[in-house]
Image (cartoon, rainbow, N blue to C red; front, side, top):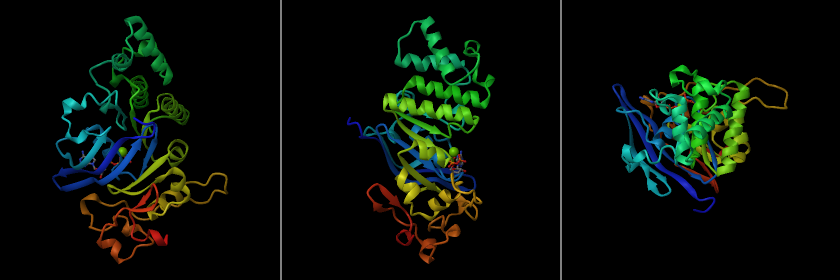
Length: 326
Ligand SMILES: Nc1ncnc2c1ncn2[C@@H]1O[C@H](COP(=O)(O)OP(=O)(O)OP(=O)(O)O)[C@@H](O)[C@H]1O
Ligand SMILES: [Mg+2]
């Protein structure tokens, strides 16, 4: 595989939840790709479908309500959507690893933390018992879990939320996956540890040319860490661009709203602008653009038809009827 080849291609992904009150189209037609060594950020308000996108790639969509109803997820050309859960075990861990918002999706409650990190280490290195223990302690130290020597025999429920998250990160470091998906990896952590964890992730990316998908609410983190960004709104990718374009040349009214809600560093602090209106109810979407009720640029057509994805320039895609005038 070439250095910059597309390691993951997601095509027209639709993941829906079939609930008692109706169908929630959590992800509705997302297409994007991830190159080897690339860091792709996903941003968007709560409920926009970021986690469901990553759970779909891992094939961990909650059952029975959730289902991938359409689309392809090609990992090195192999469609993961067609894989059985048993076959997926070959991919999770070494090839794809997810640091999730809920650490318990990755940690097993019945095994000790040490056991689980040891399992991850053993996939890469054949170590004898004593050396394996040393390595596990080293991995826990790396993510700043104190008293690591005694902590290795603890079970996940004996760890705090932040500690569980850090244990998961040390597993990710041990697995050295080709694709690391980090869903809000630092939300439960304090600021200093947040910075350390992000630094660690940058280091593994450099060392192993790992491809990373990073989901975060923090646009500052996106600016520092990512090459390319997807902006999600109500289950749709509304804008895709490289990170510089996203901040300086964005064209979607929703992206503009997100960027304007950032504090402007270095400038005199002005009031934060929040995006007016409420996030949409996914059970009651019209056929039009879901951002239309909150959009300053909307015209009649916006409430009737969903805008197609159009290319502003190479690598910059947008779904908005009015982008040429923005
Ligand atoms: N198990 C489920 N059953 C029904 N609906 C679900 C389920 N899980 C997620 N959803 C719905 O799918 C939509 C997308 O959820 P998702 O968790 O991907 O949002 P998100 O962008 O990750 O938000 P956040 O920033 O809060 O983490 C939401 O409307 C949510 O209510
Ligand atoms: Mg989420």
